[in-house]
Length: 149
Image 1 (cartoon, rainbow, N blue to C red):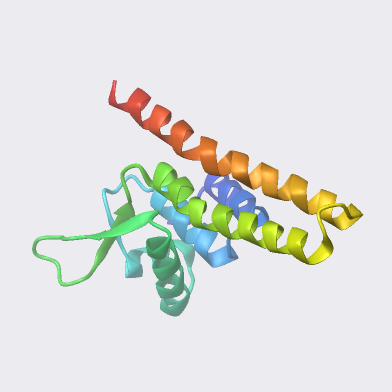
Image 2 (tube, rainbow, N blue to C red):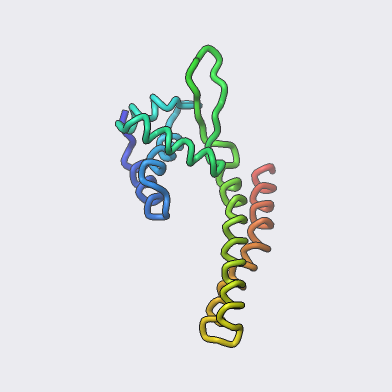
């Protein structure tokens, strides 16, 4: 069973957004499947890609919190599924990147001087990431509260 055109288009959009191609295709396979879980072998068969590519993609998706391993009674193979609340978890994890970007801007301001042209650009960058740092957790909490209702 190959991925549908909409699944492949999603994978392409994810790739254009910065995700590795095979990781994006594995994520699309897990999003579009009608099964509760999939094994690495099932994913490899669906996508007609190597088990090594699937393994690398699964590790990457697990690391960022989008997917999880789940027990499958009677099966000796690992099963994977999209994690409940995966998108909020992913965005929550972005706070580390936001903090890193903010700190990099602050270091740049110190190095170039706050009154320099570069310092002004870096100050805008810092201010943007400050804003995200404050607002993103509130936005995610509001989204989660709405989902609970």
